Amino acid sequence: MNSVSGIGIFVVNLDRSPSRMRWMERQLTALGLEFTRIRAIDGDHDDIAMEIARAGLTLGEPAERPLGLREMGCYLSHLKVFRAVQRANLDAACVLEDDVELSRDFPRALRSLAQHRTSTIVAKLEPWRKRRIGVVVDRIGDHRTIYSPQAHIETGAYFVTKAAIQAMTDLDTITRPFDRALFADRRNGPLILSVSPAVAKQSDRFPSLIQIDRDLVCSYWRRMPRIVRELYRPLAQLGDFTREIYRVYQQLGLNGMTKIRYEQVLTCAERTARKSKSIETKPNWRPSVGTLTALRGDRS
Image (cartoon, rainbow, N blue to C red; front, side, top):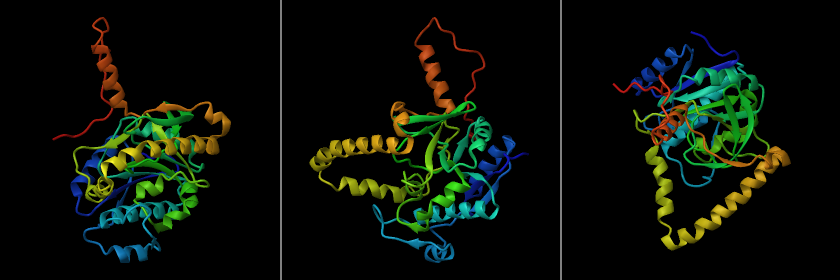
């Protein structure tokens, strides 16, 4: 077993989910990586108000909608990791939820990110669901880091530096789900990046434990009359596009503006599958022998 110098690997896991912990342990052990389990705060069974007070946090006015108890438990669990990083005086950490699949390239990506462990960055290790405006900021080994000002979701796997944790002082007040808070494009906060190709993804082995809370967002949106939604949609998209262009300029300057393009972050496995599909449509091309899927899941 080994670890990446100066980087801790933390797995967030509920006491009532031992099968998920075994799943993560098998993956990380197979990759030769040491890790630390963080007991997750259980929104169904723990006293959330007491846990918020114990962590020295405050519950603020909701930014979008009231948060469910499970969402607040998720938020508190990730903040526990941040406190553990600070106590251990680590330069950076990789935070994993217990329902992700890890690529065989996961250790290599961490070693590449290690060279930026003193920077003020947060790097998402999961794929994007759709194409979005992005700028390639750097190439780290076999991977790229991409800056996109569009909001990210899902905190199943991400890299965060101690400098970034110290810069995100607004996390002490809970006003929105943790993924929205972590990946917020702050004016004076860390640079939010994504690693491409992605080296982790949400596994379909396990259902989401907070989806019931997230579905509230959709229900709020559906209550708006359809004609109003359709009229509002293009205006919102235009506003978002304008804001995104401006944020690229603020973060990366004119040089970043010249490198804007529509990017999509896929896993290594998805890229391999797409390549294989394109090969199959051209009979004269023979697929390479021994092509392996990067993301391996125990489906038994």
